[in-house]
Length: 264
Image (cartoon, rainbow, N blue to C red; front, side, top):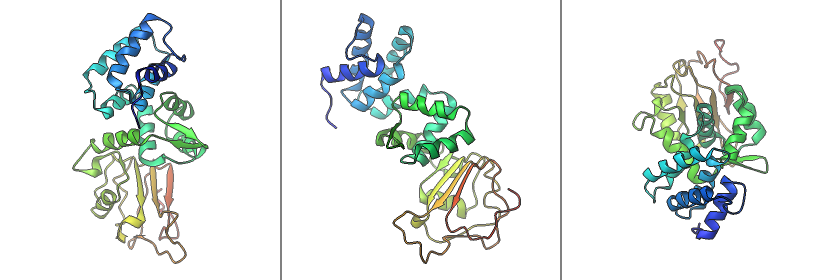
């Protein structure tokens, strides 16, 4: 996307930060100049930063703008992370859930799952929308690719070399390694696996015993993958001892057993 010129930048920032098309007071002009000197005409950065400052006191806005001076100008990801860092704890968790699992999903569906996991989920989703970190189009939760990448990076950096110690897994190779080595931990909160991207896998009966905090589990095949003659991709030759009691959403396409485990 082309950079915005100065007039376009200040108009977009004022719309997000002050709900007007231009600064109406001197401190608004000063704040606009400070922020736009960092945003470099990037419309996503301008929207996210402006939305994060909207409705705050003048002292708060100026204090936060000074923090942005520490961010290297070309580093858009660090500018975006500044807005993430200002979220409440549960809003951060919900943002990461959306980045890893729910981008493109129906809003009502996502809200139902979030309400089973977090307090005041509906209003917190609204807050993420107000801060321009997500948006809704045709009732689907959407997120800019750069914001999703930021979310992925935050989770990856929780434990770069040991995926079992991250809070969320969505990369097929990482999930395959964790499952085949039976190395899941209580750190893990969610797992999203496209089964078409892994070889056939045999799980041990105690595969999920150590994943006590797992809330979201989805093993699926993409809609373009033929299902008529589909055989189970993940096998349980010894049965399944248990599933985590914290689990709030379970979707397992081709589940190989007739019943769920008794210890669930």
